[in-house]
Amino acid sequence: MKLSTRSLLSGMMFLEFFIWGSWYVTMSTYLSHALHASGIEIGAAYSAMSIATILSPLFIGMVADRFFAAQKLLGLLHLAGAFLLYLIISVKAPAHFYWYLLLYSLIYAPTLALANSIAFRQMKNPGTQFPGIRVFGTAGWIVTGILIDKVFHISPGALSFTFRMAAVASLALGLFSFLLPHTPPQARGEKVTLGKLLGTDALGMLKDRSFLVFFIASILICIPLSFYYSLANDFLVDTGMANATANMTLGQFSEALFILAIPLLIRRIGIRNMILMGMIAWMLRFLCFGFGNAGTGLWMLFAGIILHGACFDFFFVTGQIYTDYKAGEKIKSSAQGLITLATYGIGMWIGTLMSGYVAQYFSTGPNEYNWRAIWMVPAVISAAVFLFFISFFRESVRSVHQPLPT
Image 1 (cartoon, rainbow, N blue to C red):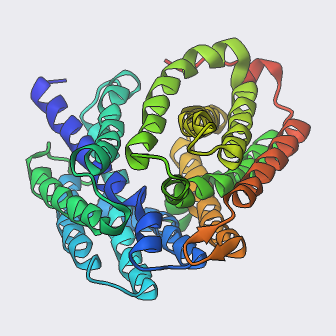
Image 2 (cartoon, one colour; image 1 turned 30 degrees about the vertical axis):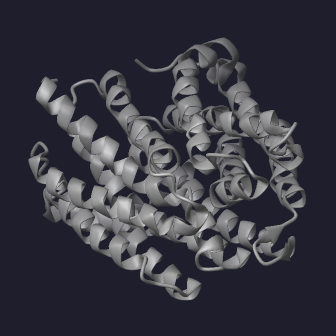
């Protein structure tokens, strides 16, 4: 790949995830402190991205893949997103905020697939070339936390700034997108089916007992994942951790490091044990949050953050590899679409709503929560999913130790 092309794609990935990380991590704190939103309203706000994720394949399959060059559509969506991100800070009622955020999420969610499509189309060997470009997305997410806490020193009451920061980045990526390599639509004139768009062409895979168990576990494990995304920043700020947003970027550093260990660990211990390790990491994370504090228990808070790499990579990334292996050549894309719909769509939607109701139930006053009780809920759910998976997943020893495809 030409250096100029690599630089353009890396810059695209950096800005793509910089935009998301700017507002997503701190939104619970913003809603709680600036808009005085309830736990239920915070959970509903985080569910907006899950709803958009469910609907995004329809937009990509029916519009993006058939009528528009990917880089031009990416640019137009981010320009529209910049306008909405700037407008959303004028909204003061949590109920109204939700609808603005849902509209923005419906615009942003398709850009994730478009960015990947643009990158893959420029590669001869995505297996070796894509990680080196995708890592700039993780870097973009990390930079947002450092800017918020270390550079601009944004207080919990002034987090509307994060939406302005995201708006500026969205405007920049909107304009930058028109400089990206030309990526014309590939499916122009092809017959479209709902099964292809939603990944339901791969439903036949659920006849395999082990994959069905993995599929159900994937939905269920996204419930505790949603607790982390929805409540962790507000919890860490409320607990008294200094520079909570910047510290949470340690989770992304951890994610980048753990993902490098996946090929070796899969060959050594197999996919089944990798997934089980990921579930154990979920349990440990929430126990650390439940019993940690900003004093003598500060190390537990940091441990909970750093475990993000094992939680995410060992279950979700390894699970994507397992899905790819089980699918075979003909339905690989449909299988990945199905598992994405199940996790980031259905699972995260259930989890974000549940986290809001749990936070509301254990609320002890305005912006005050019994955090230990809250974190025990996802800890118990993680333990239940672990027991379900270890009891019913019966993949053969050979296949779970199958080497990664080159």
